[in-house]
Length: 240
Ligand SMILES: Nc1ncnc2c1ncn2[C@@H]1O[C@H](COP(=O)(O)OP(=O)(O)OP(=O)(O)O)[C@@H](O)[C@H]1O
Image 1: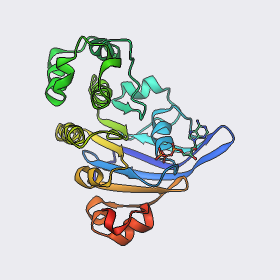
Image 2: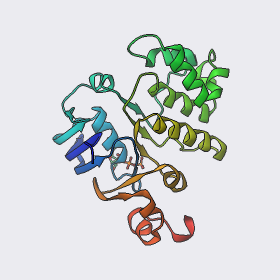
Image 3: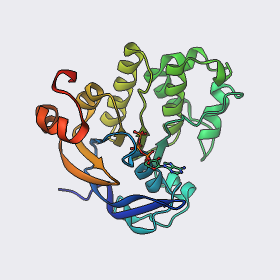
Image 4: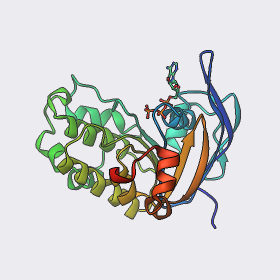
């Protein structure tokens, strides 16, 4: 196997006085979609935020494409080609869609080529280009938040629950856009509670419990093993 695009070795992260991650180990193959799964509160978001440097791991190592980013400032990590889409979407409601995109393109104006790519993935953003982001629907806001991460060339995207609360039609648009990112060669680490989406998009799965990863394997293996799903995720057999 070629070098993993992302490797976490024994990551431990505290938030305030709480010990949240207690030794996260993960190897993400390049060019694939890895689903980060697990019940509520097991540390999925904290893992993504530890990688991007919003939370500082107190021990362990994080290697992005072979380079140690454990102690790097967040903007430097982003400049290396790592895009983060937070669960709260991180968009500016009072600014237009265009202004939100301009701010996201840290290295200069958004090129027409990149803008067209984003419009192709998310047509409503073209329609509402000059509208305040606060007036967009929930699904359109989520599109904008992913589009913001796409404003720069990225090798790896960390995306936190992009389909949360969205209507099924929008969920398929989102899934299609993520597939397109993968087709262009990006690797994606995706937190997703919707198991049908996880099954449709994931190549690999990593399941967390109590602040560490307790199972990794092919998504197809997890998707066909109801007992494993029930044990790791609490999914009922009828629910999948
Ligand atoms: N800012 C914070 N202050 C204190 N505790 C926090 C903070 N953020 C997260 N936690 C705690 O850390 C633990 C892990 O949270 P995290 O958001 O990483 O879990 P998660 O697996 O993403 O959960 P969910 O699926 O519910 O989003 C939880 O017990 C949560 O209460």
